[in-house]
Image (cartoon, rainbow, N blue to C red; front, side, top):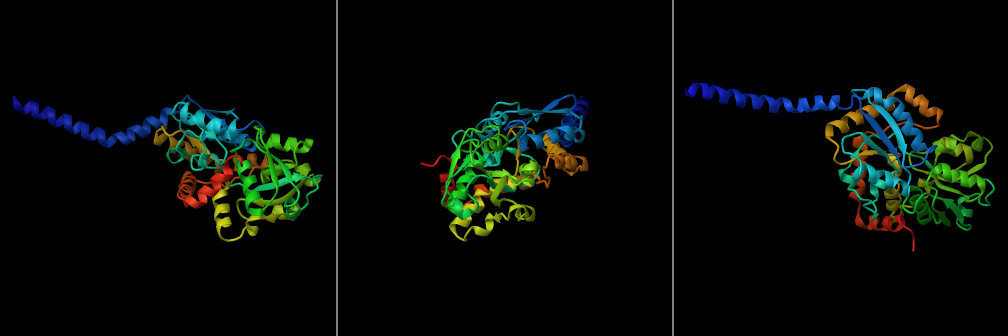
Length: 350
């Protein structure tokens, strides 16, 4: 009577062993089928018409074909607090099942590091996704403003539009003032992102914007053609001969002296390296993150996508999720003295 029992136990244990060996593959198989019939939502932290919105809608148009199950992808605009509203939603409110992606401002990953109290997340635990590429930004003002050079801007105050006190444009504006000695006063409340800020610039409400993307300016071809906008300096990404040819603009990196200012400048420009980050909540299963990350990289490599982005004057030179994560981790490992100085620029100056 013992032999059947032993045989049963052996079969049961063997079955468990086989199941344990196969379970990772079974999990992958289940996740591979998860998106069939589902809808993925990209929550954009800025208003319609912004470059963030343009990129998200381009991704939404194409990425579904690279995801097993070919889910439908939609875009929802959720502006507020420099896109912090969208990130907090994705991290703390949305289901952690891989159906919600947030498109956010590039300074947000560093909010907790810089003392942003409303940043209710741990950046090192979030699931970062590929970025379309690094950003080249410009300090741009309207052509009628009586400031023609950086030297003029050290003597005459520039009134520049921004989204929020802790938004990326605000950080860059203060960084330019701190390191290059410019007189800059920021006006907050342009929650529609650069689109609203440039409209305010055209209307004469403000002089310009501290960090409009070059791709965003190229989307206004008549402005560049008629020299309605003046670029005082540009920063982020590599040197750009196209910008320098347009207005003789100076590459800000060339003006920063070695030492403490250079350390501050390099740390402050980490968001520029990230460009336009995409992220999923910390509880999303790893296999689903991998599926979405691969689909995004495949999307960015698609010639149709690059052509569609080009029609919107958007450039694609993607960063992998590993690169994005590495930039964030490196920044969080920065010396405390440099972080403390940057923290002083992150919020409203006293």
